[in-house]
Structures are given as C-alpha cells and as structure tokens.
Length: 64
Image (cartoon, rainbow, N blue to C red):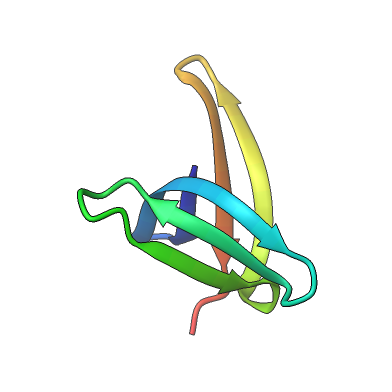
C-alpha cells in the first residue's frame, strides 16, 4: 500500500483504525518502520488499481 501525494509517497501497511479519534495508523516499510497517525480529514481518496503487474492499494492525501 502507498500513502501520500504524488512525488512524496510512503510504502507500508495499515495497522489500525480508531473510529473515536478518526485516525488511521500506518506503518511504513522503511528500515525504521515509523508509524504515522493519519486523520481521516487528511485523506482525499482510497483506492485499488489492478494491472498486469498485480493489485495495488493507495491512500491519496490532500496537498498542503
């Protein structure tokens, strides 16, 4: 899964969703494996792309 805006993306997995705080917990696959807490208000879209190379999921964020 990728998260971010074009040109500034992280690759990783979603670990959790907190409905009370309205936050998604995302952990990137970089060597340090940093966790990011992403508020739903920052998410522009969530999608899936299927191609001959495989299926890819993404979260697109609003640009600041």
